[in-house]
Image (cartoon, rainbow, N blue to C red; front, top):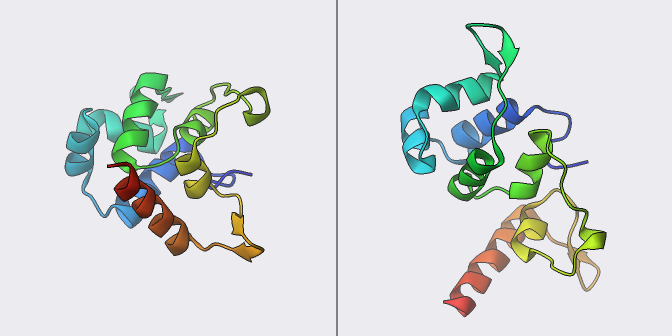
Length: 128
């Protein structure tokens, strides 16, 4: 199960924006580069004009992933897109692993989210 559990894309986006980033709708939309009206529709998940579900494109999900610092693969999955399984790829995105919901261990010690964020910060310094 992903970090989002059984929540919808809209619920996850709203949670990240309000609880993790503590941003208003307008500030978050500026950060991501989409209109605040469109972000609001994505969070609600339904177009109020026709009561149909809102479908974000992979490009919009990529912007959200980068702006919200959230794994792109999880947003793709929540958005209903097929994603390549890790077993079929030779590449591993360490940042996505550390930000994902799976438990990460080092020498039999489970890392908590604070420790995972510290590792990401250390890697960023090492690579800069």
